[in-house]
Image (cartoon, rainbow, N blue to C red):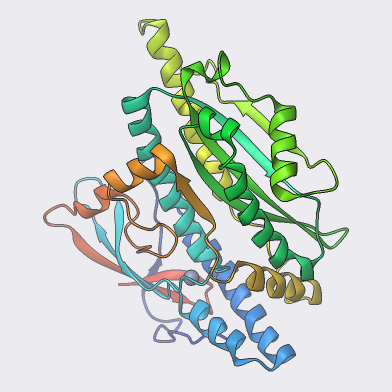
Length: 346
Ligand SMILES: [Zn+2]
């Protein structure tokens, strides 16, 4: 069990934390903390199963993750802004995965906007897969994919066609077959001339990936041009501007997609199958970078001085988080394991 802040008894006055975004969407602190608690229990059980204190230490870290959240409330808008918290940064911690994904999505928004401003590229979205593998082959397969990635982007056809990339590793699980599906989601800016001069067909992307991975079968590779849907209704805006806006909107949607939570734990209990999943994913992802930038996207990432979304600070997500209005007052929220929610002491 996690350590608890049991300073609140049932007679104390408290309110439940309610945090929402500028657009009114509720931030699910509670749900993430509950998932993290369950993950911590799995690590604890792994320590028991293996006798390795390594897992127990991770269990403790995750358990302490986001126990206490210090916000500042903006007087004018009433909105909360997190300014202090401890995040454990364990790879499989659902709380940290959530914070990380928000940060990556925000970084990508800035990077895509800047790339559009400076280079006016077109964008393609590539998915590179391999066949599902058993748990004990996952770590090696991911290493092979990383090596193959470097080969792929060293090929002349690719080098002349792309301006850069954003790559995210995702691992899903097939629970029926008990196998794992590691794959890359890649967002690629290309010159406008790509479609007329350096075009790489889907079948070519497939054979290049097959060659890079040294596979004896044909892997599944998806490629699509990112095009805007006609969702922005503004007749007054010129066609060209409207299309650019639609395209950018679609790109931002896609750049969010690769960093969604990996489905690690099923159900609400510690099970043998869940323990296997945590065991294999923990091993496969140890000291492994999940995202990477290349070419102009890497340059822009550096220019914008964005820092590391994977191992860096998870408290501050957006730049505007800095601007805490004058007269803002502090709100401290504590995780209460009995109530299973964040409470604010009155
Ligand atoms: Zn954490």
